[in-house]
Image (cartoon, rainbow, N blue to C red):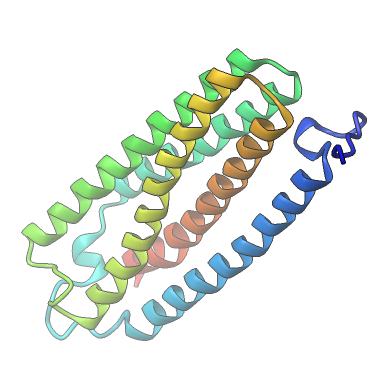
Length: 201
């Protein structure tokens, strides 16, 4: 039996299967919220347990944090532009803005790796203190999610290039955009409650 198609809806919502897949992804994001909430809670409990090692004030540099934040917020904007172009049925626009989002994601990852190398160079490793263990666990988990997101986005970009904008590829573009915006929201919490709070305490 052929899937029912409702042309009055956005392309990614036009089939019942797509609607179920998108709903399922929202459920998945709920589990991700629990994961990051646990990591944040662990960090808040351990943030003062530095045992003589480097503290947040010793490590965090406002300029670097602002650059990281600017890159990721900009990538969220460009990801939104990809959805905007998808709604206009502009395949080239989708490809362009997904590619720009990926480049920004790679830049974010590269700068975060540089940040970690700098921390290790000043003696701030996971083994140094409970504070640093929880910090690396939180930042590393977010960075891993961004890395996976870049790879996932590349796979979707290739599919859109090969198959064009269909109900299936549109659903995939929409879902990766939800994932990317979720990572952006998590970063805003990291920026506010890890970096900024760490620098002012």
